[in-house]
Image (cartoon, rainbow, N blue to C red; front, side, top):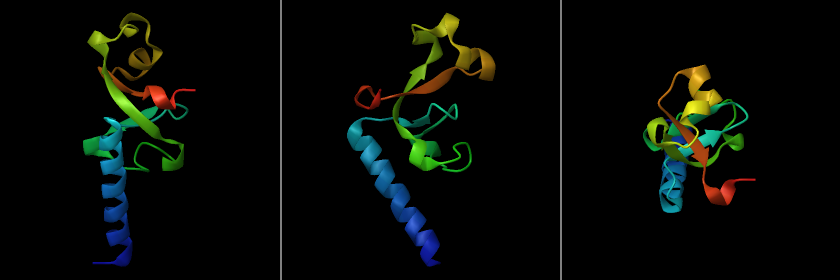
Length: 90
């Protein structure tokens, strides 16, 4: 196994464990309009720069107070999204 693959695996596990410790469901980059869950942490695939991502909770649209007026839901036709954890909101 190449050193780069080992390092990526280590960093993935490190990020995953820290997100779990914080009670996060994944990451979100609000400026890029993307988010990914713990089971789908693939930096670069949807998020252009992992450094811009912050821990987030998954929000299911049908239970969301903004469901009828959510531009993200309308634009991307999704049924869930990720929102920053309260401690990371600006």
